[in-house]
Length: 253
Image (cartoon, rainbow, N blue to C red; front, side, top):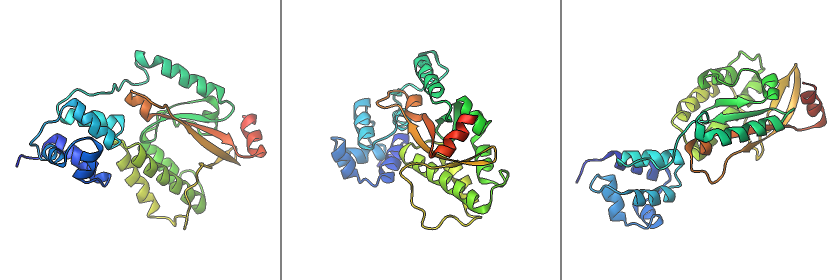
């Protein structure tokens, strides 16, 4: 039996994470259990077409598909240019348009792992300085005691941050997320978390603006049917007031 190869390690990890047997994966990717076993044990080196079918069967992200290809010694499939790249300028202009049109309500552009890339003016007035802040420092700010929140408010924020990161880790996995998740879990261990909390279908964070509570609803915009890692991973969080009083406060800014 051959030694476990890089592609074998990656493939087995993804398969186990999704609770799939070699038979399950073989059936879903039009292959055979024997061939899947050969890949995992290093006895076979799959080509691009086979790995594309396997990636689709595993429902891998674009980033993970690239890493699977690279582990097999193959070129990556999806480009990974940052927003600043010349080819991404149409996307950047679209994002800027969305941010501007969402005024006077806050909006942020966020990359995986709580990396804030951009915001509109309303967002900066509500919560200045998030863009460019290190994610670990952001977790310390939100989950620590520096904001002067009482324990129930702090527990709520920690719970929401934890839920958001767990959702992101499952649906949009990224190498930066596990460490941040551990950081938030350490904060959660020191407080009484909300008991029997039910995950909301819509995020309803309460913001403190000029000493006043602003109830909000948040929706997330993502790009669909993309072939670029950056476009697949970034999201635009659009905040709306949940009542007339909250709307008046945001408009007054």
